[in-house]
Length: 470
Figure 1 (cartoon, rainbow, N blue to C red):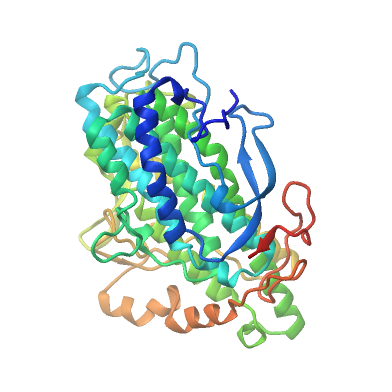
Figure 2 (cartoon, rainbow, N blue to C red):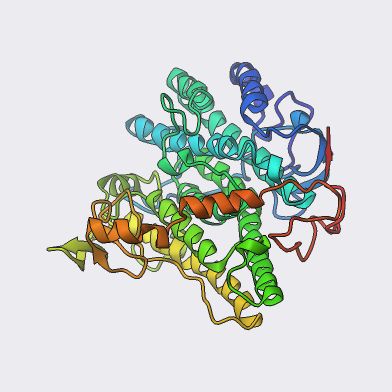
């Protein structure tokens, strides 16, 4: 299913066949371009070696080349439509999927799309100035690739709002460009997307942990009975994989360089030698993981149950599950706090769907820890990085009113305050990491706090000129 690049808005949804929709999106396009100019990457460039989608099939779906970023062709791409796709879960399981929005689910579907759409420009805004301290041209290119694809994901959600939700949808599409990350008067909807991304260690953590949350949220929407939403998310997942690759391999390279500096100077205290100590890396893991867990919502949720029952939002890999896909008689064990102690409680599986999804995410997150610990083991160090307890540093859900240590111990406010800087990045930690952030724009060179990548992009070497600066 190839993409038509002859149109003003590249697409594979036959925009030319719906002149009213085409005009509406073309009127939104200048607002998007103005947003990109004012809130997108701050580093001026001539061109960047970028991946551009040319098809939505499994093979040969993208091409690479140097592109002027302001001329990048953002568009609307949906995965191919199945011949006889059926609803896989909920009360309407087995019925044909919807090509239009049922009136009774209009408000809920719009809300789900708006929340997903709001995260896409938010991350671009958070990362706006990161290019000014890029550790290499390779990393600068990867940042820009993530940014342009988050911009395209915004287009994907805006298309759905314009095409299926009438005037309310058009108004919501406009609002996606009005809200800004961290704005006191008009912040982004979800808390994690109002946090700053002030340095590259934070960026790698964000693309590993927070973009991985995005993978799982998109995975549940891919199961939706609303077929245009399902097909939109299916293709977004293809692009999202690179974002998580950037995070995974970025942290690989930070840990590798930390080990090199520890060996070279025969000490764990490598901050004076221009490195990021392992205990600081652990604190950044603790923070970004806990903030990302909040994005899954409360462990007990009637909204999630209602979305599932209605067919709006399924489970991760729904059709591979070995149950009745309706869950009306099933139970689920959740962690909670009772009488000042950590405990468990049995609830309806429908009420625990957020936790079900979060559990899948946690299992996936552990894969990165295994990678990073293999680097430590191979380098001959006994220290191991870990994921903190799911109750640690939580602002949403059943643990939000409690203080839980990374090891899973419930403590009081005073004990938490006394140890907080041992568990989360302190001001001194943040100041040190930021002090290392100095741009390296020379081809083939890299900052001293991070190792070079094992491989370049699309078969190119590390010392390829991925970015031509203005």
